[in-house]
Image (cartoon, rainbow, N blue to C red; front, side, top):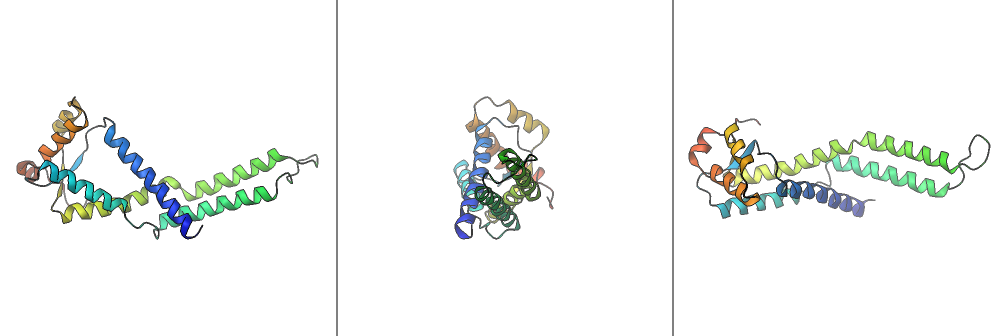
Length: 191
C-alpha cells in the first residue's frame, strides 16, 4: 500500500470531508458563529474567493502528515489480519479440538477493533481537516479577508431566514461586506 494506497486513502479522506461540507451547505444548519468578511466585496467575488480557497484546501498535500501515516499504518495492519485470516481459514481450533471458524472470526474482530481504537480515526480525520482549513485560512487572509463574530441577534436572524440556502448566503454576504460590521465585530486575534 505504498503510493497507490496513500492516494486512495487521501481520495477517501477528501471525499468524506467534501461530503461533510456539502451536507453542511445543503442542510439548514444553525447560524455560523464566525464568518469571513471583506469590506465592499461583491457577492460574486465573495463566492469566487471562498470557492477558490476551499479548493486550495482540498488540494492540500496531506500524504506526509502524521495523521495520514497513522491511517495508512492502521490500514496495512488491517490488511495483514485479513491476509492471515485467508491463509488460516478453517485452522482455528476450538476447545473440542475441532475446527472453529467462529473462534477465529472473534479473534480477528478483536484484533481489528484494537487496531482501529489505537489509530483513533476520528482524531486523525480532525487533524487532516485542520491541515486543510489552515490552507483555506491562509488563502482568505491573502485575499484580504478577516473573520468577524456574528452577534446573537444576527445568528437569530440567520436562523429565521425562510428563503433557503441562497437567502442565507445573501444575508451573510450583506454582513461580511459591511465596513461597519467588519470594524465592530472583528474576531480577536489568536483564534
